Length: 425
Image (tube, rainbow, N blue to C red; front, side, top):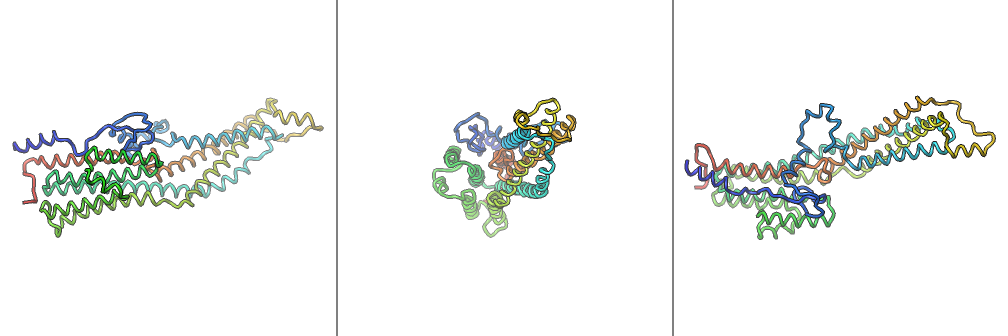
């Protein structure tokens, strides 16, 4: 047992395969690689990954209480685009209502319900189209996550297979290192796909510097990979070749064995995961559909804003007229015309006007707000690497992979009560 204690002390004192480090994150630096430009704060990757993990790891029991109404962090209620659009619509309603009161002699004679019929007609198509787009975006996001999990699990399973065969830790680390580099390549490629050319260049330089400083790529390997485009998939050629070398050297069963075929199947599983991620993100719903949906949402919202403006102008005109406050333009017209222009003989009470304004505000502002919110959510899910609200926590997944690989090595070197198996004689 003494040798095992020595092994345990060596493992505990050894540096992990990929140790965690502090990184600079900025508003332009997404996820794993900080560009270091316009940095706002410094945080460890574990803190950044934990913040990203909240997107998919949360307690559902709090959503069953009224506390869900007051929670803001990570919700659509903090989306600036949503509130900007709603602010513009509300401004349109106010301006339209003011112009109606200012230039229309009898605002109560304007029937806003006929104008709202157009909006009600659009809602029939809008609900169906928006629901289909939401379902498609959720499925696309889920497929992307499954692809990442398949890639990470393939790296774990290859590591477990080689530990079970008693391959030297240095040789296992060589293969696993390529697997982790593949994950880093894929994540950085997707993160940089939504950046401008200048930020993309800076992030790319930071990525290569990080890989070399952490000894994830050697000076001999980096120049071979750098000119390639599909680095995340092509590096698995090295993994398969290295495993073939181990089979030829006798570290693992030969190529005509089932064990070797199983390890090769794991390499193919990793490449399938990469292709699944790429296909789900690169092939979107045709633009003609998404554009038409967005136009219908905005058109419906504008019509609702105009309807609310008509109701607001009608109600405020009746309320102000009740207290003897008339439009200065209408008063001027009264002074110039003889006989004066007669108003409608259907006066509206102050209470009825206030009730109409409140109901119109709910139906013509809250409903468009929800349509706009669901459109924002669907667009965020359709581009998980372009939004924080639906970002896939790749940082946390990579860190969990690194930790699992280190723990596998420790468990393999410290077997309780039996000698570590070795396939090679």
